[in-house]
Image (cartoon, rainbow, N blue to C red; front, side, top):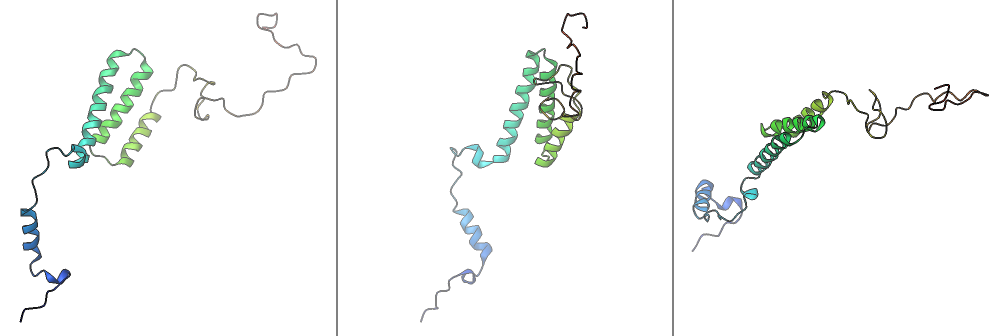
Length: 146
C-alpha cells in the first residue's frame, strides 16, 4: 500500500530545502529587462541626478537673478531627494527654501505682492478707497493738482 498524498502547507517536510531547490532552478536574469523594473529606486536617483546636472548647467546661460534663485532652490531640493530623504522631508525642505527667498523687487503681474497678501501677486483686500468728495475735482495727470 502507498502512503496518501498530502496537499497544502503541511505537505512540505523541509520548506528550506524546497526554497533552495526552487532558487537553483530559477532562470538567469534577462539582460533585456529594463532597468526600471530591475531597480526602480536606482533609476529614480539617476533621473534626479540628471535633472540636477541640467539645472546647474542652465544657470551658466542666464543673467536673470530670479531664474538663478529658482534653479538654486530646485537643485537644493533635488540634493535632499538624492540623499534618500523621505518625500515629506523633501517637500518641507522645498517649502522652507521658497519661504527664505528675498521679496520680489519688481511687482508681480496683476498687482504688487504685499506681505501677507494673496498668492499670485493680486492686490490685498482691505478697506475700500474713500469715495470722492462732492464737488471735488479729480486729479488729472499733468494737471495743476498733480
